[in-house]
Length: 446
Image (cartoon, rainbow, N blue to C red):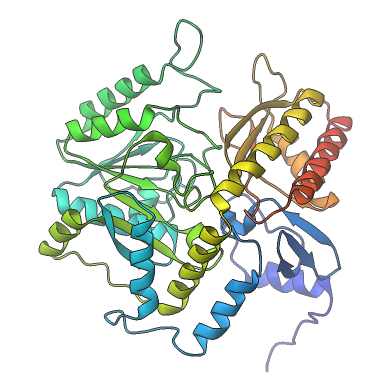
């Protein structure tokens, strides 16, 4: 006898089915208790009629906002003609996107592999680095997040390592250079990142079996708490890699394609990675990722039989979307817009910091901003409960915020609104955050 069908016209019925049939995949977290019906621009709309301002661009991906009319038009047009192919076949959208990505990048980055997710692109990049170098050891930041598939998860240290058995041998972490919470100090009490970096690689050299293949890092650590390494750091890191015959892989899943005010965050540092990975922002919310490298590295990988044959490699539908994303970013100068809106957002947050002592630090670039909450600015003592209270109150007031809570750090809000947001929308979000912090403190005893 068939099981009775739950009445999904009620919220109770929806959540009963969700609780019964969905696997919970967010660690200790739970699903946001809102039924999202549709989204447009900077807003989400619930079945109950609530409007929620989205300060995370979905999963830090929808840089053109939700349901951008040109993205919608591309999907409708492309899916009616060519959506998916055998993985060995090519279409014009794929080749066009590969060429156009190369045109946005410095030499020698010119060869692209189009995939679906950030984890998949990092998996492909690490696999390529191991094959090309003939070595297997991978170095990444201790606050890193590169994905949940095997090699990407082995290089991820901010969460998800416990309880799954041994990771692959040869994965090492170096300290993340956090200027707000420095572990190596200069005489002035600031982060001595050069000494920290030297120490990190002394530890790597002591543990390595002589098979260092690559270093994979984010230009701004997002899930690690919006940690931005100081100017000069990546040039010094690249030198460490060169000394050891390692490749540098930069993961720009969240920082790439104009969000930080540059097309790519690494441009600030005057370095060029050996391999670049893109995802999230490239598809503006649709599953599209890329691995981009030099012709020399690609040739060596090919000569050694590089294999990364997946179901949705080089799919035309999402490649067409990627081309539309590049159209809009270029035409609307969204790199410049991210700089201007980022400055507006930072001024607003600094005004909030003048009124709320629990705002300990504001950091990031463009429209990728971190706000760290602390109980005491002098000691930087943190509280998970305070961050959770502010987050809940923001949602009640109509603002979706994401907070990162890691051991040894305060709660850090990751603020990443769409590049298409308006100043009025940012001001609305700042007003809600202001009220939410005030409300949370009214009921908080520390």
